[in-house]
Amino acid sequence: MTVSTFRPADVVDPDLHASGEVHRLWRWMRRHAPVHWHAPGDLPGFWSLTRYEDIRRVYQDPALFSSARGVLLRPTRLGEDPGSGLTMALTDPPRHRALRGQVADRFSERCARSLADEMRAEIRSVVTRAVASGTCDVVHDIGARLSSHNIGRLLGVPPQDRERLLTWTTEAFASGRPLTSHLALMRYFIDLMYARMEEPAQDVMGMLVHNEVDGELLTETEILLGCENLVGAAENAGLSMAAGILALAAHPEQWRRLVRERDDGLLRTATEEVLRWTSSATHSMRTAVRDTVVGGRRIAAGDRVVLWIPSANRDESVFPEPDRFDLGRTPNRHLALGTGEHVCIGSTMARHQMRMLLETLTESVAAVEPAGEAEPLRSIAVNGPAHAPVRLVPR
Ligand code: HEM
Image (cartoon, rainbow, N blue to C red; front, side, top):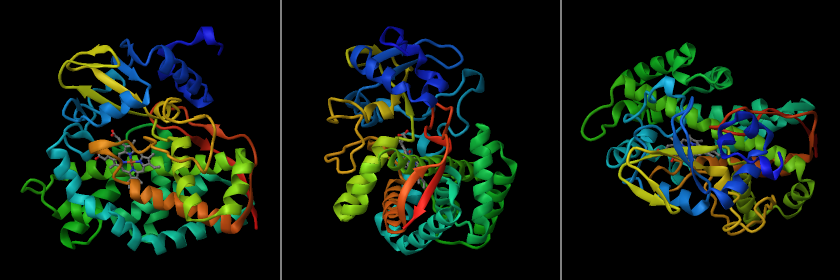
């Protein structure tokens, strides 16, 4: 694409996202059309926001920008998201806060620390297997496996069933259809839900079933949509880990630095930089509740607003040399995990997991080498590789 062919309408072209060229379009939009009206077509009309400060402002104002009418773009023919107004991600305060409070304990720093040994052991075993196999697919064999096992552990899926969960979620994400249409997966959650009704446990399913929200128990539909919300959101973690390994393969000097200087400080900044660089969640959506103005443009009540997260994370007014992958970057106030009321509830867990993965790689791997062409996802909701053969050379 040359400069003269930049068309903001292409911002929803999945091929442009797959090619990575969308970053050039976003850079152009940040400069020339930071709040741009995207006319309706297959998708409803919406405002595209590409600048960091505008995006942050929308995230931080849930009273003005509602999540209850959907947080992801959906073709108009599909109608509203079935979770609208029901799940944590798709409600506004005060209901949102109550739903989040129902399960918040399992996502706390304390809980992440209590799971740290188990998570580290799992990461070591997954990396050891990937190293031993010569060439692995970092998407399936590392990213998806770790994130699926982790969400399984949180929900209360017993260890022996977590590989099945991985198979089902892999099929579901590859199909592009909603998780609720995957019968084996939903049947499994229905069985787990009834098991928890009979025998309570301190896991997320147990909390969804037994903890009251505003003085009432959730309905079965709400519980299952809550599981779907969590499992769907956790896909981001797998993609970030896989894309992070690819970024290390593409930047050998950064990999060498990580191995050489591996200390708490660098592991912390490296975790944040991988999250910023990979920005695996591509957008969030909100609906304006009242007329307002953003970036000098009038937004009417009822208008949708789409926040392009990877664009915020490459905004040159916030990040010096935004297109440089720099594991020591600081400060790094990226928005990869959102911000404000709906900031990612899995963020503590995702950070711990990413950091432990980086640490484990530096302990057991001498070099990270691409072993073939990575195939990118064709999606405007999440981004990263669909498949990526990599050789992890043993230390
Ligand atoms: C690198 C990994 C991850 C990324 C990049 C990511 C990204 C995000 C973003 C951008 C949001 C804000 C959405 C919005 O405001 O509309 C969010 C919310 C959320 N994330 Fe994550 N996420 C990650 C990992 C996880 C994990 C591991 C889980 C579950 C264990 C999870 C569960 C959720 C949930 C349930 C929400 C909705 C929270 C709410 O509405 O209050 N995420 N995530």
